[in-house]
Image (cartoon, rainbow, N blue to C red; front, side, top):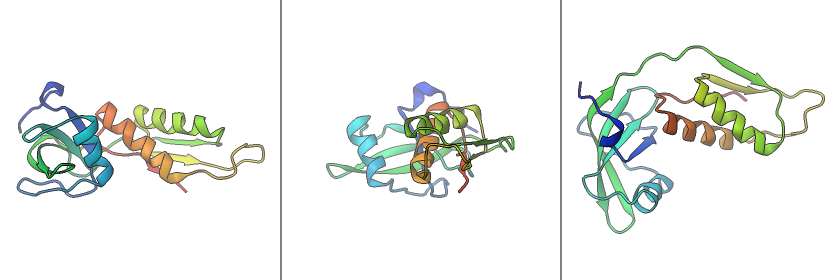
Amino acid sequence: MWQMNAADTKARLYVEDDLAEGRTLHPSPDQQHYLVNVMRLGDGDAVALFNGRDGEWRAILQREGKRGCSLAPEAQTRQQHASPDLWLVFAPVKKARLDFIAQKASEMGCSRIWPVRTDYCQVSRVNDDRMLANAIEAAEQTERLDIAEIMP
């Protein structure tokens, strides 16, 4: 297995597709915008990919037109390992704090994040998609290989 260090890749991205050598992946429009416009990656730049199942893979970016791109996984850099079965069960607090809780729980390695409604909590509804986006962002930044599951 080829070992990659942080200097070899310029970005790290969570994808839902299966990762295997010889495949071509098309990231979501938001991910393409991030890679092409925010990170300013070009043809041949390396990107680290993970999906929570197949480990971490080194992929090569190929530009497609002015704003698009595709990714070609070429080598697995880290094997997938089982995360500890660590749950965070909490009563929702103010909305800005929910983002912080999702990020920090993911950084700590929680496998499940479970907001529970209590009699005195201030938040009436929790945006699961937003919490998942925060958990994904934290996993990308901390080199975690899986994503914390957001419980309903």
